[in-house]
Image (cartoon, rainbow over all chains, first blue to last red; front, side, top):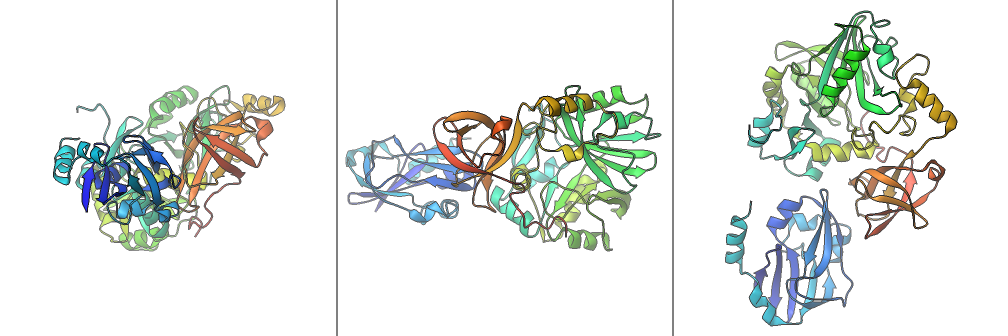
Length: 124
Length: 361
């Protein structure tokens, strides 16, 4: 299983043609307590960089972008009533969407963990 | 001081605690420490302490019945018993709110008025012009204030003071705290049992640390404070009250005493006779989405008003808000809150949103 990161602070964990998507600890730290997640419909297709779903925190609403082009297979229904799981476990229990990856080449545009850690160290 | 923002004496304490700071009303204030929802829970379940040193205080002395104070504010001042406080408003000639305030009757001829941080300079100059010369003094730079709020607050305060603190709601007294005679009042902005401690600025750090030495207390910031007060439906000056909003429109006439003359009285009477321009409503959304300030309130697809305060309510697990609508829609039940993109179904309801607080314990 490989994990990749985007500049918009999403992560995608890839197993064969399925990617599990969530947001990073950095994103969660900036957002604060998440109070609502607008989960997409199963079957929704998104292109790399398009809005996959929306999360709201006490402070503001924020968009989660598709790390790669994909088709939504599954959503984490627990987030409907307990979005705070994203805060407590952003990389594991707080996964948001599972998608069928439509173009595996797009993973080349993403960062690995080391590159992402370096990237966030340059941010304020 | 690079940022140009004012800092309370507790600024260093907040930085050491790792607080997230942000500008508020010209001050650099802590928005959160551990997290907004965690601090909210701390206040509702145990006790939380808030830095409110930035708020303003005025001392008013002299014959209460003729120094001009009765004419300057909406609440009846002379009838406040010594050792009690009362909430009211400073209005402009149009009946609009210049600020909301609380007046404490310290003695027959001495009052302390507490006002908001962003507005106290203007409040002072307005009141000075309404009172007889020499009757009002701006003592904001003398006092810091620390709010201790939560169901365990009385126990904790009693332990710290070494004696039972038995104040009635809105009552206050002088207590021996850190070697000084200190006003402590049973007032607050959270809907929980709580106290406001008026320490001298020089004593604030010591007081803050003393209170936090009790492990049942944790610091809470303005983020949690906003959710706590909104769940009670308390207005925030600048959001839900301003110079273009009257207490009648805001549904807060119980804090207006019409039996005396005061600036704005004629305007209120006139608007009650001729019809209000708007009326305040409280609503909750049928979703976990939060309504936010400036979102539109819709009915049948048409805009009937605007949201003035909105947030997620941990107690209700949905969005809550205050807003103003054209008076003819005041009794509607179902509305839609819209940010221009997404619409949230909502229902108008009576305040408070949160009814399980320890406020009157």
